[in-house]
Figure 1 (spheres, chains in turn orange, green):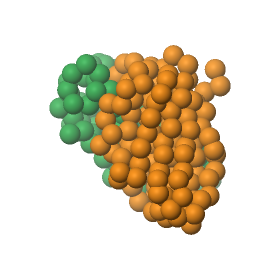
Figure 2 (tube, chains in turn brown, orange):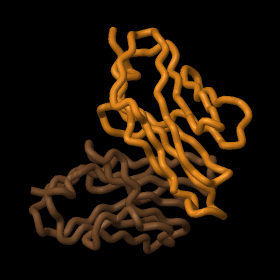
Figure 3 (cartoon, each protein chain N blue to C red):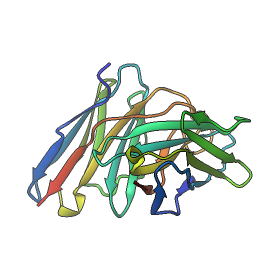
Length: 114
Length: 119
């Protein structure tokens, strides 16, 4: 398996524009997590899915953020409209079921909003 | 609510010496998993070691070991014989159970410790 695949790797956009980040989890994994990493806040859990169903989105910072998982092999994180404070590295991770299973991370998307 | 705390923003260690990175956690779930990840400057997240809440023995993986003290809710990472390539950010993480409690299988991280290995 190719691992968790995120696209794009880098995104530069202007304030106010819509941004869509994409993630393809590892085949067979039941969980998908979206994280945001900044120097100030570290790795924040934004939202996670179990079998394509959102379980907890309490980490989503504002209504400008939304996430979907239409099927087991694809998820998106959308920011509309984007703001400079959204600049961060966004990670997607997937894992099998079980409290003893580690999550496998994608390479991340570095988002810069100017 | 679950919480992971890493109190050391940065640490220095001399090459070939051992170093301990601290991690404390808080949860009301009886079952949980504890993980350590390494993030080098290139940015990828690398899984290092896992400890289950019911495990009687401390986990070990090569030069990595986990000093698990359940009563104190601590899960410190010990790196023996440090190498220059160990210089990186290290994150402690906790995973909650899926079928009961409020965590529902989530995975939360501490803020990390930046380890620098000196030659």
